[in-house]
Length: 570
Image (cartoon, rainbow, N blue to C red):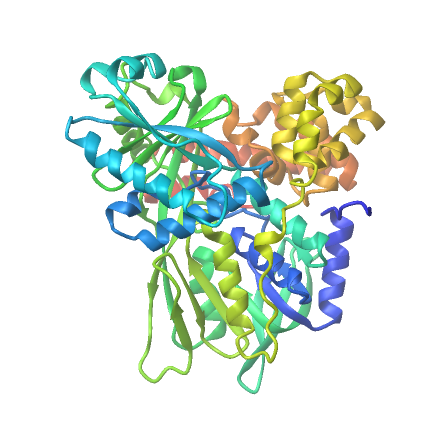
């Protein structure tokens, strides 16, 4: 069996050379979850496929979500049963077949403030479970359970139990969203797709009114190139409007950005065996278990400022703290917040102009595919859980004029790391003994790499110093930083500290102490000299300080001005 393909500087250079020298069947623009999913969908149909991303994989919305793989319980209240069923089907597929190493069940409590809520909420959660059980794939999570006040006090002693009429416990799933995207991209590359990050599309190639490729710029080397393709799929999320401007003419999709922020607090700050969910005046509030932490989110406010670096303001943080504190005996304050992150949701408003030759297909409430000109497909909207359906729809649309359209097979393509995961989990004790690592370390690695854990352990065996914890972020091994560069496409310190790991939100100093040790490990792999290493560290420290300053500002405008003071290094 051949070794899995790695994403690294050599593979990136080879991908750019291949894309510049041959016509592809499908080129995908945008390295978020839908773009990576579309590249995997296309290449596993037997098509030649490429993927370009102007920054890092998952550098936008796809690394800043609530990290839930869920059916969307609140959509039941809107009677959107088809959407919930579709998302629950995908949840079961990801959990039991495609990515069991990355997706895991997580329990939630729905606290009942009024006695009448028990039959109302209970019937909704029962329907939620029934829809999951009636799907094509295994449900994969336990059924819901009614919890009464006394038991709730044992399960979640830090909730204001005396003010509640018990709760209902149900299960959904969670995933490290950035790891999911990277794994999708690597799986696509392993099946033959060409993947290149830090490659910006600057224009479209057109012949006889048809898009036949793109003009692009390799931002790492400041080199321009042309990539020709029979079909181009734009999966740029909140950047969709900017891509439409490159096409010219009237836009077919109107995508507005909505900001959602999340707080990260230590797990021991809220004693509870499960996460919890409660309704707010605008949406729902999740308190989600995340290893040794809780993720609290989210907000939903319009954002028309810098798309690359949405900023959380003090008002956003106060909003979340105020709502979660209505449920807690011991209120949280700003000093409890370990990390903060802000992301943008692409909210979709389809547009159809009189006499427009383009075609727009509303495929669901959550996402839309459009073909503004022949040869180009736009996809926008949607949610993390249903990325595979969106990717399939985009590729189907790109091939709609083809004589033979190979069917999508991604529901039968496990992601890299899925194979061997259960076997290695059963062998965790022997892996710990052979590697000299503590078994909790092995469990940590299995939850991030699955069956690919052997590649990380091989690094440790070859270079025992990499089996040591990373200074400043001791939950991670030094080997994980090296592996991020040699196998997972990380090219800059930001990539490692914010996406390949979650050090930037899981340490009180937001990765400041870990920055230089991580940069030195990367430097040895990427050939950085001392000056370049210093630049990477300095950039990261400036980014952290800019984010801290933005979170002290009362308004979005002030927060944005503070955050953009530290631009991307590339």
